[in-house]
Length: 202
Image (cartoon, rainbow, N blue to C red; front, side):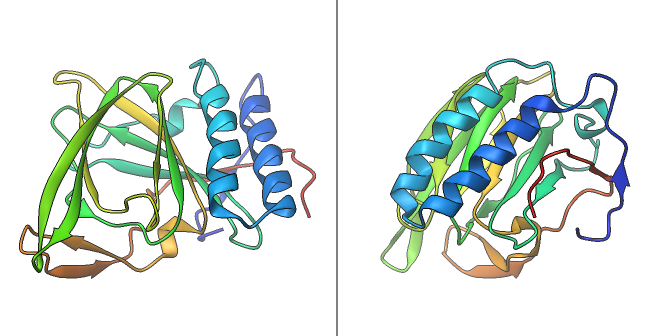
């Protein structure tokens, strides 16, 4: 589990996250079709972020230097990972890709996702989406994989919950400038222990 250690279950438990993980595990046992996965997992993620009462505070902490990516769960076979992204005021990613399917669910605050696509050897913007609490967005090489994300709350913290079809902290991806030049990176995770979940998955 990325060598980050584990923490004990917080008071009140993590029942909603555990139910979400079980649902995704069951879904991936039933199908490998990306469109089917994105469609059904979107419903589960929307339910998870519909009420903001389950995320332990340790995974909701901003860092004044950069946005934080906290690992909440990694499937033993690395078929999927669940991550909490925490944005401080004014924080944003560079333009980047994902290389795997993913879903982003807005738990707290709001985000702006600026989408890009290749054009004549460079990148061009093709629109933006504002995610409010409860919204879910998809990314993948098949549906659009390159974007830049920023905190839409000028003076507050925003938090989104991400589901990816791999151990996203270990996937070699790339950032880009507008010329389209890729710069490889591996994101890793913020230095925080991983929660212990009671999920009964082998």
